[in-house]
Image 1 (cartoon, rainbow, N blue to C red):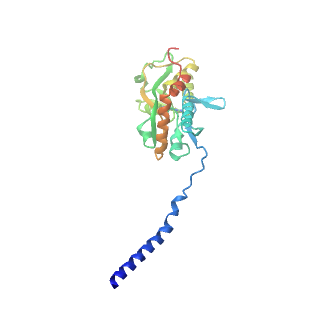
Image 2: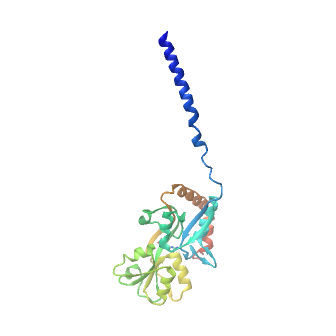
Image 3: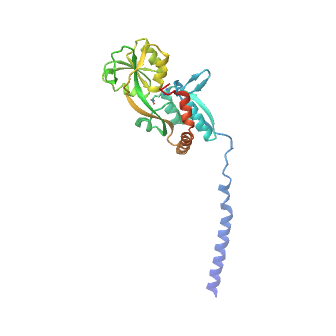
Length: 259
Ligand code: ARG
């Protein structure tokens, strides 16, 4: 029958066609490069003017953050490198990809969350007020109308700018603010509690007020478009917390008040 023959010929034609099409297709995906297996380097941006979290010791940058981040890199099988910079350059460095993580006793704030992601928190902190012994400033409320020193771009800077009629002096390093206080150029310094203890310990005639200004939490900053690293960092932090390694690092740098 003519019709039957025609149909079967059509079917054969269709078959041959699709087989031919088959051959040329596949090759594209199979050669995806495996990416040379050399170790990645985790680059940490910090401002090493913040003992006991990060500070210079000879040619090295040491402290809780430095050791914690090195341990995080170790957990992830990565090499590790620290880049020291101004505190207010850290978020731009992370955001632009110049650094992978910002670790600088950095407080999680709504504002910063606009520009970077934060890991799970790894420390609780406070902002405290340092004054000269014998100062008439007895609590944060007495800062009204005073000259208050801060480190530029820190949460201390932000809070101080809200104090009524206060004149805020911004320094590049927290230590410089404390120096200015010693020299009576300013009336008080608003800064994180642990560095405050370190700075006051090394200075003469200064004290930390009992009443803290704020409560805060520190976390690691990571670029917003790097969700994968965020998860990796949180995983590594979790195991450092669970193994007791993080506590060990903290204990090395912060002696408990009882001692
Ligand atoms: N916790 C404060 C903040 O996040 C001060 C941090 C300053 N850190 C430093 N490495 N200098 O603004």
